[in-house]
Image (cartoon, rainbow, N blue to C red):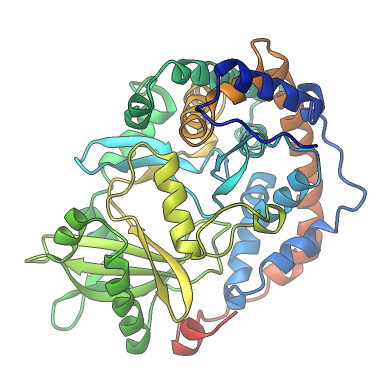
Amino acid sequence: MKRSSPTRFHPVSERLAFGQERRKVLSRVDLGVWKPAKSRPDPVALLLAAERGRLPHLLRIKHDRMVASPFGFFRGAAPLMAWDLAHRPRTGIEVQLCGDAHVRNLGAFAAEDGHLVFDINDFDETTPGPFEWDLCRLAASFVLAAREAGDTDRSAKEAVRILARSYREGLRRFLSMSVLDLMRYEIRRHLEEGPIYEVLAKAERVTPQASLKKLTVPDRQKERRFVHQPPLITRVPPAVTRQVIAALRSYRSSIGPARRLVLDAYRPVDVAFKIVGTGSVGTRDYVVLLFGASEDDPLFLQVKEALASCYAPYLRGMKVPAHDGERVAEGQHRMQTLSDPFLGWTTVSGRPFIVRQLSDHKASLDPRMLRGSSLVEYALVVGEIFAKAHARTGDPVVLLGYLGRSERFDDALARFAAAYADQTVKDHAAFVAKVRPRSRRPARRVKTGRKVAGSRR
């Protein structure tokens, strides 16, 4: 009979024992073993099937970005790794997963009081699930990014061990904190120099005024409107503009009263369609330009389609909101100490969307920096950041019961990361062989008309 997980109100000894017992289901040594399941489907077929419901004329761009390198492929292949993780034993120690944990899905952004924060910043796949899924995906990304930066596998595996040790030590620190202190805790160590300092310095320059110059131009009436630079950013028909702006009314109810007061001081003036990232290409993604009393006071909102988490087919029974935009926003609030003050959700033409600021001191890491000491420094911070997120949403006592005090988990995670990175190289090669001929076709004009915006999956 499966034993249910104890709550935080149970004795510490019982919670530790539960974590230790989970090693019988998935030992720390076995966690480090990667072997594809015999039933593993063709990876290319699985990924192409996962793209159903996306805008087909944009998928060439996604495929080109995935073809570029194994790490680029990895960024767009979360559904494949979700299948792989779901078809091996799992600890059953539940936390809120980022879901698409990799080195580029952390970054800088401005908190409500204006100071810069470095934290996890992509939650499209977030859902409750086994804690090790985040760490396995994150660790594999370190190896792939290090290879792309020209570092050795030996250095990459050592960085993964440091990542795992930082995660374990972080959990132990958070264990001694009160719940209130943990909810307020913000990681600021290691931010004075190195790769994260450079991200924060870059974020200082990404202001709404800078985005106004970069993303807009004056029209014939000398009013600022979005540039038209297809396929990356394109104008939309008036009907689509009206749909998106109308959706801001229901979005308003998803943010707090203090944020509503600020939002009400801005008026929307233009909408465009924008392509971002790798895994998100093909989703419906709009940007909205709003102004306060003058054009010297811009606000940019991103209204991004929220598809179901790629883990959803494998985690039936988990309690998640029915609206995927709400799922993303709720997961983000749960995992972050501080979140974008304009984070909310809405519905456009029957589809769920997440709403957030587009450009407000936001910046992410260039993975080419991840070599040598920068790789180690980044691993130290990222390990603690994920420990904080998992301690907030899970039970650090149970997690530490499973992880233990030795380096056995650290070594296992490093072995898994290197082996799964090798698997990704093979899958990337298969993907290149199948989609490269199509990716070299001439680009077609991007359609963002009413029919596309309002169509259903």
